[in-house]
Image 1 (cartoon, rainbow, N blue to C red):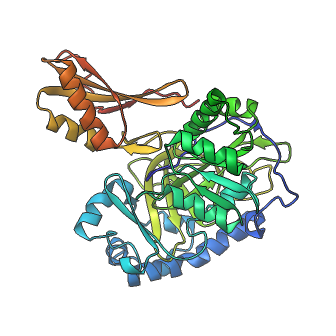
Image 2: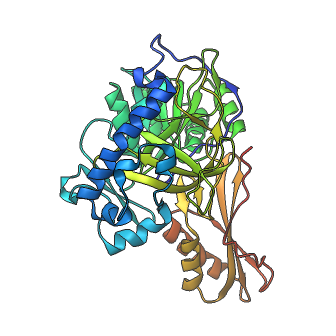
Image 3: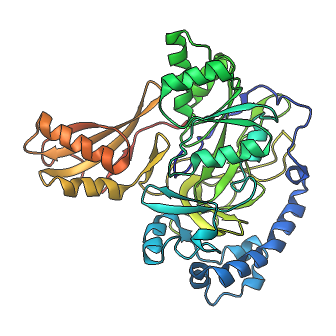
Length: 436
């Protein structure tokens, strides 16, 4: 996971193992009558808005002239303006450090993160601030488990998000972070973690490398993944290797938004909205809610007193699923991550923005039209920068590849094309991955 959505691909109903303890739910909030939940959340909303307006100048400007006392229903909530994730960078530059959307000064926070963009995020003080314990519990994580956390702890908040929830449940956490695979295998062999958390692809790297090196990684039986799509073939491979893998959807701005949970027969169908979030699905480019079942952009409101997010437009696509989860949780369900409403694309858990690819083209005037193609190879995300140039060379490819990694923090291949041969369709990032 990085800064960016720890997202999940939609999955058909899939048999998984049952949760490992008789306690099926973290608390009684998860099994409330749906109407009682709606009433409780919207009863709290006006006070959240009042606090935001009183203590956060960004929200005071965003909600200027609005009678917040009347925002007590989904219909009323839909009249509020959207705060678009894509706008945060400029808003924070104009009013550092958090765009005026935090209710306290930077020095009052527990941690301060930086995501690609750059976008800066605060973490307040208190237990499970990002609300990840619920997703971990639904994935079968319990007190006494040892959790091998491979999300990054450096600058970006991914590692801290899952770390906090695991410790709130009473687990020990191996703060592994990404990379250093050989050292990670040594730690796994010695400490015998029962749970993996991280991006979906890296678990396969660990398991494959362990098999190649004769290392024992068999202690890992469960995983909660995010920051990338869990493709059906990869989930099936993990299941065959004795690891039950579940997904959650989160962002650095919002914390956990939704998560998977198996029913009594082990079936997983959709993702359950986290109790501290209100999710709307709107028509992309507008704030207008779409009918349940229709694909649209996810807009999220979180009840966070330190960093409230009100109608935050994530740029991610999803849809509401009908009915309730067979696991007994009664909150609304979504289909998971269905792609992006814009060209911003998540690769290996990191967002890649069209602006970054445009900046690369400006660095190298010998390039014409450029296009980043994202694909899959061997259950791994790949990037190839296609670039028009009249002077292709290995030296130019090496320099451009260095710029690509510097701007996106990801490695990619370079493929040159003759001038005028790339599509003239305005698309600077093409995601060729299949999510079905």
